Length: 232
Image 1 (cartoon, rainbow, N blue to C red):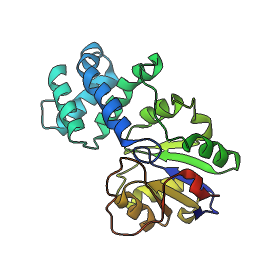
Image 2: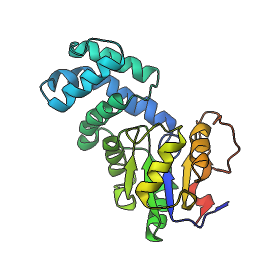
Image 3: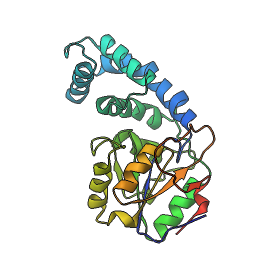
């Protein structure tokens, strides 16, 4: 059991609030199936065109590459789980259609919805920090199997804030939240992310969920298997 008397909670998504298998086997597969058609249909959209150009440059291709070439590059990045900012933004745009149509429904562990509700009701500032884009995060938590969880969340951060394994990213988040880092508890399944948050001064907890990989990292972090073990 973890006793936390701070004022903010920062949560990872994959392997923390949701299973890794849902992200890889459902969300990534949906994006892979639809990325080619999406890029072709929205080629004239300036936002999509900018992301396609950024993706092409990031992968060493011609910025004016055809949609099918950019799609192949995007699929390759997904297969290698590269935390590419333009890729994550593109995924969010693709997932929007799936979530809004009901084809996609986000998985969250059973302890997550009541914990978010309780924490928010108690006045805690609960936010999300994920490599997935802010757009994707809002879609995800707005369309879960437990309903819309967005009312319990005050903010979202992605890799535009900074890399998740850099202490400076957590310092920026604490500043944005208006809290001292020591008043924020960061929960993740990745040791290197927890190490970075601790280096920035945050309290840390390791999420141990079914299907998670070995966390790695340099330091030992207190672990929980359920959010019910975090007492605020």
